[in-house]
Amino acid sequence: MSTSYKFTLNGEETEVSGPPMARLLDVLRRDLGLTGSKEGCGEGECGACTVLLNNEAVCSCLVPLFQVEGASITTIEGMAPQGQVTDLQRVFATEGGAQCGACTPGMILTIRSLLKRYPRPTREQMREYVSGTLCRCTGYERIFRAVEVLTGQRTPEGVADAPVAEGARE
Amino acid sequence: MSLSWSPKSLAEAHEALASGALKVAGATDLLVVDHATGRQHEAVLNVLEIAELRGIRVAGNELSIGAASTFTDIRRSPDVPKHARLLTDAAATIGAAQIQNRATIGGNIANASPAGDSLPALLALGALIVVSGPHGKRAVPYNAFHTGYRKTVLDPSELIERVIVPLPAPRVQIFRKIGTRQAQAISKVVVGFASDAPSRNALTNVRLAMGSIAATPIRLHEVEALIEGAVLSRELADQAAALVEKTITPIDDVRSTAAYRRHVAGALVRRLLLDLHESQTS
Image (spheres, rainbow over the protein chains, first blue to last red):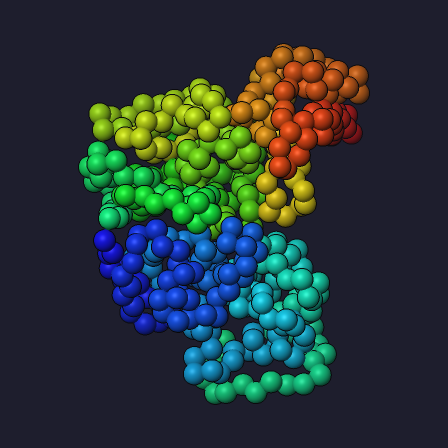
């Protein structure tokens, strides 16, 4: 028997029927077609499936559907409505923070939760927050620089600017 | 058929538990196993919204931590770092932010992994576990909570309600962990150490607990007795390390070998005592 669960997804009221222990990641990708959240390890080690649950970063592969009843969830799709990018996403593009892209959706949401807690994060705070979101391309340096450019702690070194549409600012 | 409950109170929770529902807290271990094995549950109960299991407070001579507190809650609470630094230091090493935002202290205890990182901290702090059952509550000293590998005194009809740390907490509190790497590693050896330091260079009320070196997290009573009241010195640190290596019986497994664990456990205790010796003589 499936039960129906209601929650807010990217600002919209959403209702999903499914087994209570269905993984939120599968609900997002398979039932709702939101494939921005990636599955890496399926064990909470890699962070590729990171979403925000009530504004805190969590691994969606480890969240059972029945526990999101009444909660608010933000996925990478909610960061870029109508295909527009936010300033955070733009600096990832211009400063080389995104390379192969596999970790990027989870990384963007991890950094967003970091910036909510520490608006001008130190390297130590950044390192601790991203220690659960593995990136094997950038060595993290480019990601940290992108964050520092965004927060005005560093001068942009980007080679190209990505288009930012109106209304997509952080 | 799968049923689910998200009770807001213990009374409601006990109704659901009477029907045999599985308790689900942060699910950070449970869902990994479920997904890997295809295991299904007939009925599940969300413990995260039970009011009595929430909140962290100091009341009288105890620090009371709701079982549904996440490790993020514990780290951000003003009271836990103030009284039980051992526990916040342990919490900081449990997975990364995504795990700490979900995993709970009650879940860590009930899951009963010998590698649970908060568990040696709770042993060293002399914690009590308040358990709520259909017929009332009982307080179990944490050192009597684990009865064997992944076994506890908790009945399926019972819930861990709160974790109590008696106050005043030990003045000296030290957490040490060795994993494969610094961030979000499952421990090979984890140490919780607590004591009072009434006089310069000697320790009393020594509690030395370890994880990942036996079927359950354990206290090393023989080593505690050696350190108790003795004057800190290099010789004492060496003797304690040798006794640790002699008394523990770790196993070979996927994360490490018995020989490595034995060596590292001794070295951790030696360094810990040397650090205390240096900090007290400097």
